[in-house]
Amino acid sequence: AECATRGPELCVCVYAMLRARSLRLCRPPLAAFRLLSSAAGPSAPSPSASAARRAMRSPVTWLSAAATLGVLYAGYEWQYQRQLHRQRAAGRPDLGGPWSLVGVDGQRVTSEQLQGQWVLLYFGFTKCPDICPQEMDKLTAVLRSLDGKGQRVLPVFITIDPARDDAPRLKAYFGEGEFHERFLPLTGSFEEVRRACRAYRVYFTKPTADEIRAGDYLIDHSIISYLLSPEGHFIEYFGKSLSAAEAESKMTTLITEWERERYLRATLPQWVAEAMLGPVEVPKGRTEAPKLPPIPAKPVEIALPPAPGKARA
Image (tube, rainbow, N blue to C red; front, side, top):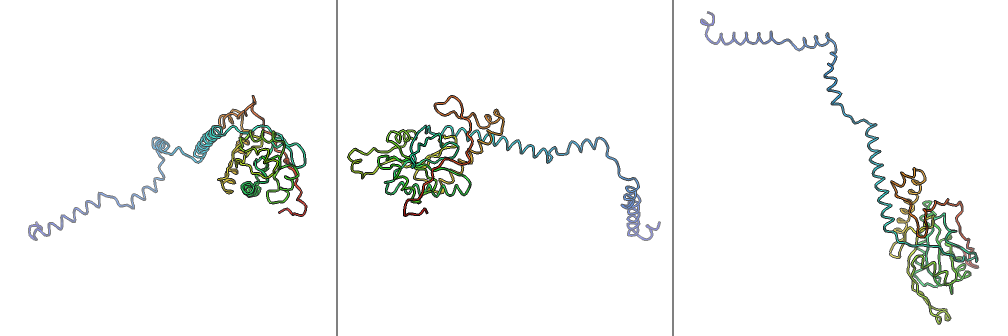
C-alpha cells in the first residue's frame, strides 16, 4: 500500500534493502570462520592425503645426488683412461732397445743402468756449428722449467761423431757450463754408436776416410730428442719445430699421465686396472709385462768438473 501511494521509487529502495539483508544473513562473517578454525585445532591429514604427498615427494636427496655424480664421474674417467691408453698404444712407434756406451770418465754406461728415472736422449756432435747448440739450449730451458715443477729428467747426449768426440773432448765441451749441469755425454766405438742410433732410427751421414783424416767435416743428422720412461720405454719424440714452451707442456702432460697410470695400477685391483687402462704393454722381445722398477733415491749421473780456466754458468 505504501509503495502504491508513494510511488515506484520507494519500492525499488525497499527491495534493495531486503536483498542486502538476506545476503548478510546467509553468509557468515570471516571472523566466525577464524574463530571456528582456532577452536577446532589443527586437523590431522587423512591417510589418503599423506600417501599422495609421499608419492609426490621428490626421490632426489643430497646423498643420492652425490652417489649419482660419483658413478657418472667414475664412468667418465674409465672411458677416458681406456681411450687414452688405446691412443698411446696405437700411435706410438716401435723405438728403443739396449745399448752400451762410454762416459767421460771411461766407465761403461748401459741403457739398463738409466732405468728408474726419466731420460731425455739427444743425438748430436760437438763440432756442430749451430743446430746442436741451439737444440741443447732449448732442452736446457725445458729441463730447468721441469726441475721447478719437481719433474726431474736426466738429459743424455749421445755423439754421432765418435772419431772426434772422445771422452776428454766431451768432458771439456760440457764442462764449460753452457748447458744443463745434468747432461750425461756418451761416446763409444762407431759400431756401438751406430747400434744406439739404429735403435731410435736416428739418421746420420758417415764421413769418408779422407774427411776423417782431414778432421774437418760436418755430419748431416736427424734433429730429434727422445723421452724415455723410468721403465726404459720410449714415450715420445720432440723435433726442432717445437718451441721450448711447447716441449715443456708436452713433457709435463706425458709425465703426469704416466705417473697417474702407474699409481692406478699399483693401488687398484688388477682386474679393475685392466678394465680401466687395458693390459700392460709387453715390449718387443719379451714374453711378460715388465714390473715397475723403483725410482732410486739418487739417479745415475756423472759429475762434470768445469774445464780449467772456465767457470760453470
